[in-house]
Length: 222
Image (cartoon, rainbow, N blue to C red; front, side):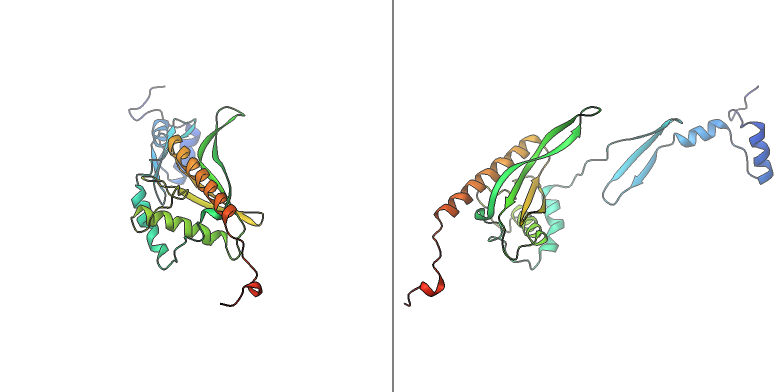
């Protein structure tokens, strides 16, 4: 069979069906070219590039890294913090019960997973009237305010890391909560964990030396 300049045409049976429907037959080469054409999908935050390789399938490439700086993220969050009262009491060291490493897991083989340190999991003591949503928003807004220079950083602050952005999430755990402060990079993650451990140790000392409260009716009148 002698090939045409546009490539090999589809089989005669296919051409016959196409002619009956009025459609113009395409060469196999043109069909293959359409399938190997790169496709761009635009998500809400970033572009994802998908390259279809031949007729065998598609390979999904890594998305473009998020180029926002910590200050950019703080400014995006700041409008949601308007009118929110200062959360110094909610973020006090005495409310921290314990700290453990926060890990993410990546596949390192057909069945194995490798743990990567991401930061700290901060276990909080049960507090009356405290909700998961209110604590998370308080911690996030505290981080944003510190990074924008609108609030001071606590000593060994586990919810802030200078020149970095921490992803803070809070989950219920029994009658208390656990707050996760996570970041990228092993060095930053180690800093977050060490700061959280020192913060928790200070809270334990504060609880140990806190004066006991006397019952209201036992307090002598002045």
